Amino acid sequence: MALNYVAFFNKLRGVPQNRFIAEYSEFVSALGEFPGLTTQEAGARLFDMFQRQAASIDSVMVKALRENAEALVKSEILPGSLLALSRNVENVAIQAENHPVG
Image (cartoon, rainbow, N blue to C red):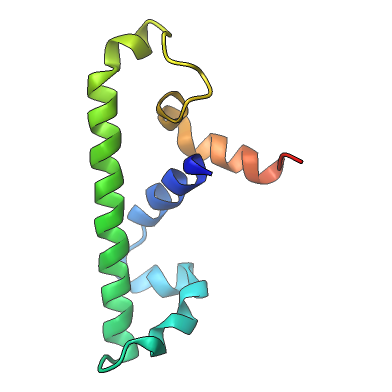
């Protein structure tokens, strides 16, 4: 679950604002739920919020990688940990989607 969360924000980070709603159409229903905002303004605010969250995730992951770089290089980090998997997060998340557990 955490890996999919990181993968979602990695993918979202690469989406330009003018493609955000087209790429994530599940947010369309929320656009009319912001009193006092047009749907365009609401979309811009949602995009901004998700970009800030992506930056926060980046910050946490960069800090963890810096603090654990030596352990990663020496393979002392459990291979199934988020930190180890984050080095290849998109591929792992895609595999998990294609082969769900259970």
